[in-house]
Length: 310
Image (cartoon, rainbow, N blue to C red; front, side, top):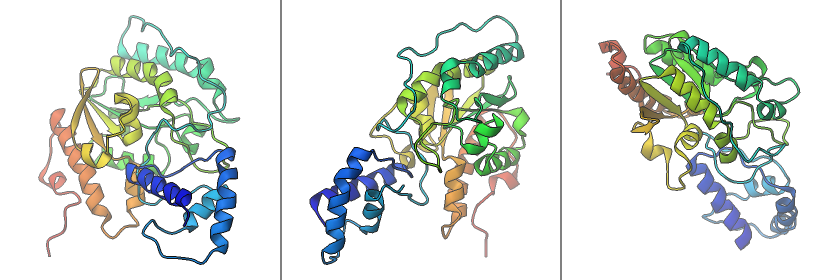
């Protein structure tokens, strides 16, 4: 394998370890890769510790390379983003009033934001947020997916259904918490399938809206679901790893912030030998959240997803 392909393979594996499960490659890069991959296909195959060449060949053909059982992660790598973003993020003052009135005002403003609207697909909707404007727990996810942009509501696909089950296991309903995304529209890309993680620039544009939602709701705890949400709230950090920060308390706007895996990560983990091990990690994080907001925890809840005694 040429040094160029080895380097690309190593970079793909590094991104995989950091949680990136989709990579978008510009045409200029593909044009450089194609002759190299063609040469590799005609050369005698040799074993290498750098990994199988099939992924690199797929990349050179312009196909999307997917990795399994890894959580999504936002990076600042350049990706197709459609129309450019304004240099200035939104600036506004929340009007006086109760939480319900303020959140309704903000919802109307976000849904009519020119930048948010111009980044929508043909039938897409701005995805603001849902739940109680006086919730103790604020769940923050990454960017809306296909199901979310159609319904205009966060977490309504398979990952959302799992999040609903997690909330129910805590003794709550979606109406008792607040759920929002770090980005208010589904990121555009040039593929007819899949989702693109939002760029740091996109998340920074929407951060004032998320910050305003949190300011209005005044939750006791924020739960960041996945590395993309963490990056959007706390800023990018090349040394940050979900495996190290999951289950730890951070802080955003003076509010305790619990970091845990995104529900989609748990869905991918279901194909592994011991999916309950990952679910238990997330559940331990939720037990910490429940304790922080003074929710009662039963003995049954304490034992969720623990290995069964033989």
